[in-house]
Image 1: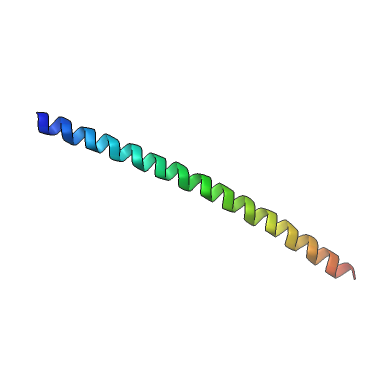
Image 2 (image 1 turned 180 degrees about the vertical axis):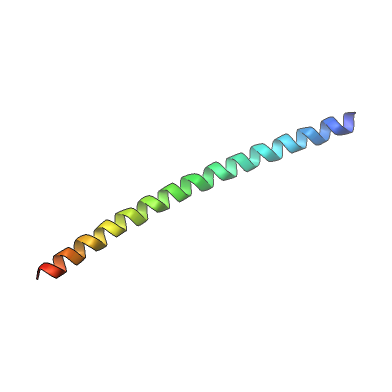
Length: 53
């Protein structure tokens, strides 16, 4: 029984670690999407400017 409890404790810790990793990756993805979005707008604004000339 004690062995099972230790195993469950380790599994819980691993799950918590995975949740932290996923949360961190999620923040990273949101940051990168925002960066891409900003860049996309800049490029399209540049294109509009170039096309006007």
